[in-house]
Length: 310
Image (cartoon, rainbow, N blue to C red; front, side, top):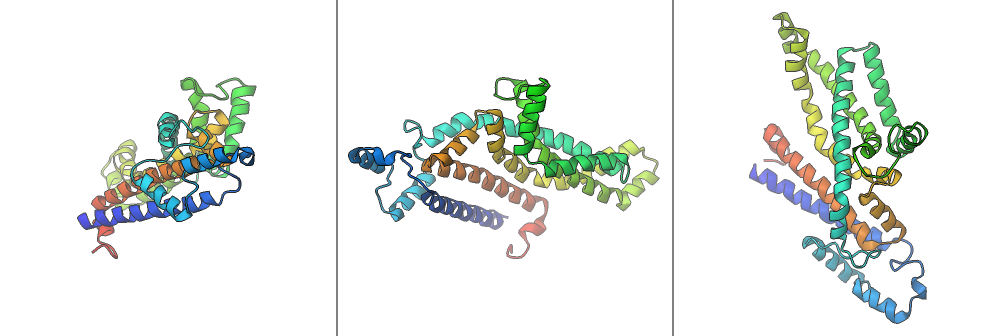
């Protein structure tokens, strides 16, 4: 097991290095100037001072090594847009809102998705199944950047049921959370339905029914408990997907999270902000996948003893 963990840790480090390297290359190939659109109008002495301050006057290979060294020490550099603030400070300030939105969305997705999946399986090829799967298909078909404006306009502006934007209280968080969770609801509903149908056809379910157990007991204690296992295994990656998916939704509903910083950094060629946020989200994804792999290894020894795991 120790070798398995060390191997996965090594894979995680290699993955992070590759992501950081690709980010550096792509960042350096962005069109425009990181000092701004009017950089050519800045006095040469001032421009040279700024280039030196951000290390842009050094050869690319030196910039790359400095970039990696800073990442190792947890220093993502100072933002070009906000020179007085480090990227890590901006993340600490803005990420709690993104995290809160993501957590609310994932809770909604899990609860609604599992309920729809269970209803669909228990009413296989009936109205309940067709209705739940129709909702799932709609959820997969409509992306959050389309659903978000629709919810904001109709529910927030036209009907006035909930606030159309901003981030001031509980009621302001409902629409962005729904927009963010809708696609995940569809994924979980379809997965739970498939898993439930598979479990319902198992011999031990038929045995439980033959013993005279009530339908509710069979469903709750035997069917759902076993059917939910495949869903649990993908909660980690789905959580990361939801958290990183807040970027677009935040822009639509004016949520003070990392989304606005990421979008504005692309427009302004803020190298340090782009690379910092990319690496930050990559670390979250890598850590979740690493933990998931370790849990898999404990739950199913065949994973850690598979090909290349001996």
